[in-house]
Image 1: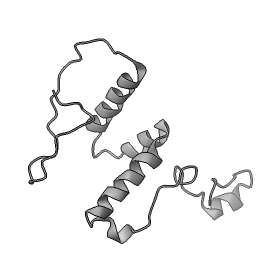
Image 2: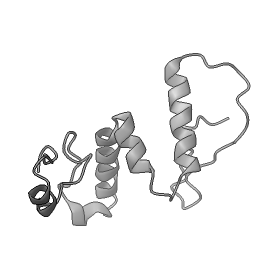
Image 3: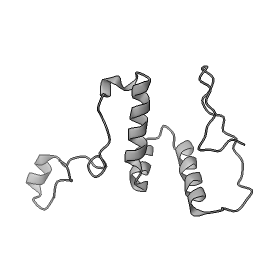
Length: 114
């Protein structure tokens, strides 16, 4: 069985993943294995539903995954429009609060980095 974290790569144009879905038949060996399995299942379950970014932010791994993705896409020529773009931890997890909202409610504090 192929590990969920290591999909088969068919550079020839065939599907890039060959996932075998089944019930877990052995107990979890450690916390890391369990966490990776849950993350992988959420990735498949909620694909194309717009939740992936928020999962990555909540787990504290958005910078690692998004910057690696950007780097990979640039090598393929796809990310050339976004040359130099990167996710900055501590800033890009949240959007800036609009200035008008801060004017209307002075108790609001701008998110860091904006």
